Image 1 (spheres, rainbow, N blue to C red):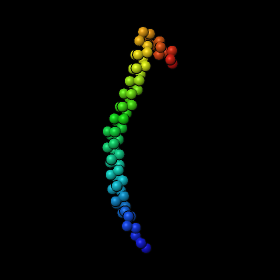
Image 2: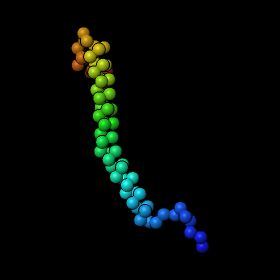
Image 3: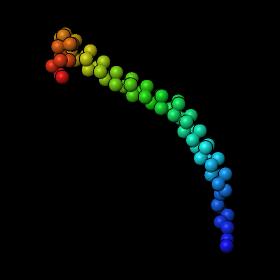
Image 4: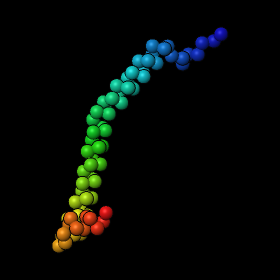
Length: 68
């Protein structure tokens, strides 16, 4: 039987998988938090633009109830 020269030992595979997981964990802590804050800021900006620019002279509460 020939051994494949590119075959990896199980220990190498687990080390590689744990390194990938550590990388994902670091991305998860920082990157996902940044992404969620960015989405939140975009949503609040859209709401602000919708409510405060289009309905300046009208009662905002009444307009909101009409939209629902």
